[in-house]
Image (cartoon, rainbow, N blue to C red; front, top):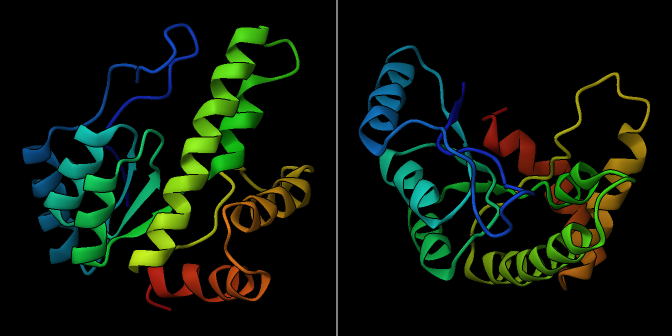
Length: 175
């Protein structure tokens, strides 16, 4: 089950997340109900508050995690909560007609995410690779390859990236 713990990254108000998402209490209820059915919960979560609320509620993964913080990563490592950063999705969301200041903002967020991804890997946050593309998107392969490259750009070796790509999702989904 994928639950919304936050809104989206705002391109109108850089640095902010749009309104939306379940509260920590609501997420805990969703996680408990899902667990009663043998299901895990993945949380769309952007911003420290939403990420920490989702992690505290016991989700299996944080999807996106834009505006990730060290505090949130520490909690995720402690609780073995997966992170599926989908960094390339943020870049693709700007589109070809984006204003220069929006592109500059997104590129700065991506640099910060790469630093957080490197830290996540170094402290043992379980990682899985995702693109946020919906199949049969004809650009899926390009997005997937770009995401692999971003993990390497974060300082994770090619062999480790391949391990994350091949095993991360399976472990997250308990396959």
